[in-house]
Image (tube, rainbow, N blue to C red; front, side):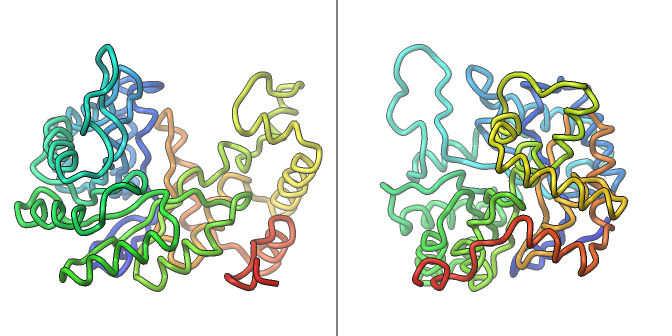
Length: 332
């Protein structure tokens, strides 16, 4: 495994991030523990979750599974850089949510941190992330709440998720006025098929020293050999899913076919190439991968050591061109 520093911090994290969103809804506790053990064995030390994972009436279940894994000891907590998130409503009862059960008010942040710490069976969170921007709460209030939590030792670093470039700038300028560290990472949608983050988000991250943590690095499976898997089954994938919807569009299907053909010409696996490409991009710390079983982690780990040559990188750029620099991309 290779490691890098998270943004402008001294924190060393793996170039692959273990996503845990499947833990609970799709992967039971025992298999989830096996995946986390396999991740540590492979050198993956960066785990990502959120307080709402588990979804519906099971919100918080994913954090509980991670907490029960930590409780097994063996240095599991000490070896793990733990990231979780706050924003979404944790209301699971009947009727409408009670006020202040979501978003980024100082009150909800305080309550949410304590609840996550209890579920995660730990005394601190390494990276606490704002799951979405809260347009109704001023940054001074948010940073006041965060400063207290840092002083209490409950959180160490703070990151954002799904924030625009100007949100990152606004947040870190407000933090700088307070003498606070500010955001050190941004978790955003970014992959070969979705490169709009390159226009504003990634330049802002580079300017303010944030590490980019791409989610959905394979476009919901689209870049993982979707057409080849279809052909192996002898029929088109039935039903929903982002990959199935995308392949129903003739133009997008043709582009994915070109991608799979080019990757095959180089004797490589589509999913590994999609991850390896992200690791060549500016400011990217590491993509999030969310295996449902331990065996699915192996391919992602191989991608970290995969070197993409200039010819392949040029071909990928031709198939999936980026939006271009801002503001030129939209100014003329």
